[in-house]
Length: 214
Length: 98
Image (tube, rainbow over the protein chains, first blue to last red):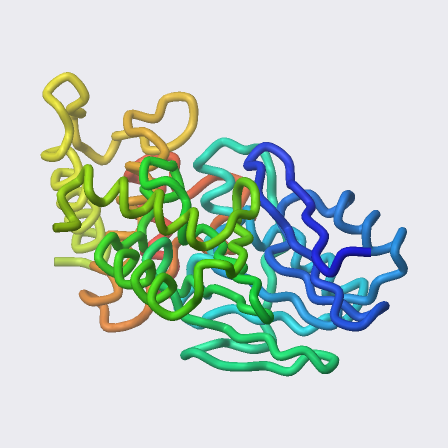
């Protein structure tokens, strides 16, 4: 079995990632709005989520947090600056006319700066990468970077929600591009995993078009 | 000025500011009857989100306490506080006097 299992959630096509630390122990990153497919994978593989890491507080990344926590008693990690966004989930779901509601999660660990947590012998690095939201984080495990919506296309609806900050996002791009080698894998919140060097090349082309790179 | 009047003024000011950013074709008439949410809504979803977040900041500053309009308390009410300016005002006053 691969160390990383990707589950694509419903209408927002949001990625939930399950990282197997040391079977049956695992970490769930961004459990989205659809609990059933996540539950099925956990049950089929007899996995026990020790921790849930939320890259940010948008509803499509935290929709199933409460259900997993209740089922497995997992520890939930979220940046403190995204707590308000997290608590606004049902408001956003309502005004965006999704017809959905979630059980708003209560994080156990509020992240405030870059940190490393050891989960069943695995070092889980939390790197603050604000911009998409004030509390957006990238989760690094070895050479894998779970970036949430940091690399989401600028024109995406969720980049028009309050809390988005273009300048901070640019700094986060630079932080990632200058800190990690090109062969690291990016596991984004939406879309397919890709090598960092490919994401970086796309970014540079886009930035050149906008006149941000000399 | 009463709390009701102060809250109403803050909401109308925020709505007027939002309105200034609209194209001429999208501009709305701002009053206590302006519909914010539901079938009669005169502003779109993202504008409502922006308005509410702006109001949370302004109200918190004005009344020197954290005012949260978007948590599950608001969402579990039978009638949405965001239906129109009047219902929003009533909800804010209720939070302030609770």
